Image (cartoon, rainbow, N blue to C red; front, side, top):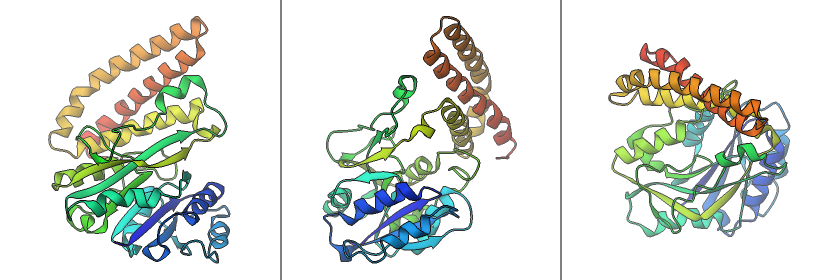
Length: 308
């Protein structure tokens, strides 16, 4: 069972260096995995960082592949096309890993009957090198779906930051939907959950491997009000686009239009009241939730007429 580790990256060279260093320390046979760095048009020193690891004897030399079409799922799909492994492990370019990470991710796939498991998601633990403002803390926590390795119910979906999928699965369900995940200028975030849903619909189980944990770095730029609000707005948009493509999706979205108007007004009022009594953290949380409703209100009519 050969493994491809796919790191999709865009202008995060210093984080990528830490991730590649973690791969260099893996307790995993070096001839049984490869590393793809799918560079989505980076303008920083990403190429130089990849070159640093091209001569080390501690790991396979990473293959540096440029994907010109901008967007996370274009990069993921390029990884599928380039992969030589039986399993493709998609990982973010800013994760910190333990030496047993690869072994723990592959353990469920190695121990279960072939064609039973369609994907394995590992635990994702957010860490904050620059600190965590209290008002944003409730939105950042480990997945903690279960304490041992095993299948997940349909209400739970693992994260694309730490997700292994057998390459043969893509021949049955297709590749990633390129309209649902982040590209230059947006913070969309629905491609991995949509893929997981398709894998389940094809009859596969989705497993969670808590021991295959990664630490996902969240720098100060991701804990600002500006980032949180934009992420909420764009996440709502990507969820709307995804739901519109499902059976009965457009009727459901139409029914949610009024509900989101009411939510917007309610959260805006809560934000105002919180600001008046000097509870700025609560005001920020309410405004982020109001902005999420704005994302739905913006995208619902567009999706109903077939626009992104």
